[in-house]
Amino acid sequence: MTTLSERISQSAFDGSRLRVVLLLDLYDGCQKQFLEAYEHMRNHVASVPGHISDQLCQSIENPSQWLITSEWESAPPFLAWVNSEEHVATVMPLHSCVRDTRSLRFSVLRETGQAFAGTPDQERGGLQPFPRVGDGVVRHALTFTVKPGSEKTVAKILAGYSSPSARVDHQTRLRRTSLFMHGNRVVRAIEVQGDLMAALRHVARQPEVRAVEEAINPYLEQDRDLDDGNSARLFFTRAALPAVHHVSADGREPEEVNRHALLYRAKKECGLAVARLLARQDEHAAEDPAGPVVGSTVFQRDDIVVRLIDIQGPVDDHPALALGVHGPRKAAVLARLLEDGDALLDADHRDLAHRVRDADMQLITDRLAAPDA
Image 1 (tube, rainbow, N blue to C red):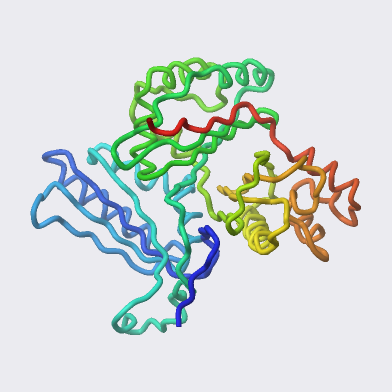
Image 2: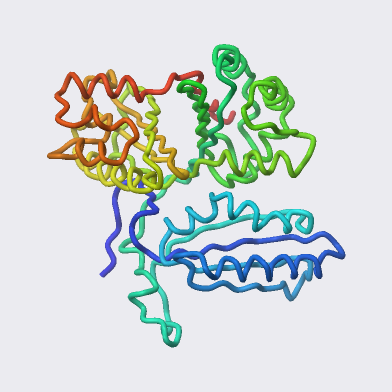
């Protein structure tokens, strides 16, 4: 019998197969160009590790509407592919054909029918072990770097913007925006109730947001032109820092909670392992009804890992939990995966508190949307 997880939780690490659904609306007259681009992409993605199959479908009601579905052994190989420079180059020819897109990603929970011929089910990944309880919130982050020496100027610009309207449409609203810096790296974490893409488009159109984006343009290490659709799309594709795990403790709403973002610099090709380790630690921490960590979200792209935590009290009062290394030898395991991990080996409470302060990003602004009138 399938049981139900009682905690608010999402995860890319449960081992279940992944179904990706991409809805596309084509410009008139672009079908031939689109099909040629799709054939190139299909032949390329077929060799990507973890990919099982894909289908291209055309609407029987509106020939301009298309659907691409793909199946993957699990979420991690898909995320590694979709966030890679290889993927950026592969899908580039599609941009001039497509008026609008929407990407949806689902774990396979149950299925009816037989496995594909010649493909043992165990080789195609498993099913999601149990349904997860959601809170209607989509979590996402963006990260980019600014030119060294411009950090104070950029922080001042980012802290001074006027918040856009929280209401996007009848079903989507901005819930919270938290912005952090660590050295010259910026991380903007957002929480959205409803449709993430609708919210991102809404924010991008607001004049107060556009003014801030234009103001920081001269300080970015990666050039972008917001008036050029391809340039802006490429920048935000590369800046995407997806949430790979989130968990909130059961039914706890303490009055005083502090929000922190910790930056983990993983060794080459170790980012996924770092994210997986932190996700397991946070699942265990959420089981403690008296624990200080109220909620945690792990964001990961390549070797950049950011862990956003809501914690009661000062972050260095519980350094092992704050850093995600509570338990025997967890610090040693994490140490082997980080660029600067040697200091974690045999670290005591004081050393761990120092490591937490090193990883803790500077909070620039944290804004909760006002409730609807």
